[in-house]
Image 1 (cartoon, one colour):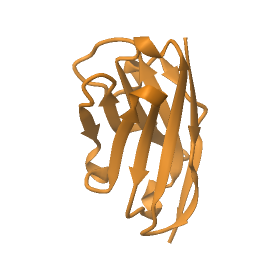
Image 2 (cartoon, rainbow, N blue to C red):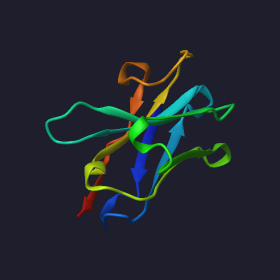
Image 3 (cartoon, helix red, strand yellow):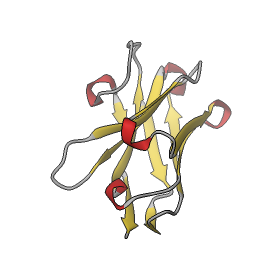
Length: 125
């Protein structure tokens, strides 16, 4: 098993920045990839960004490209999401997730085995 703990959420004005962290513990050696997802009230949980744990290959949803950066520190078993130029529509609960399996992509919630508890990001206009 893997335990995931997110931190770094909060309230920020439009145009501001936040950096989320996701600390993993447990069987971290079994992780193939990790991802950030977000879910706004009444909406589905959507992928934001993903990163493979060994090679560091990344994927970004179209609406965050150029504004968000996903990274990882393998030594600290931590994944990050640097969010710049935040918009009110980025407001959501942000979740990190870990996958123990190899897939050709990691863009859907079904590809992930473990989830964090979520952290609220609120962007005011």
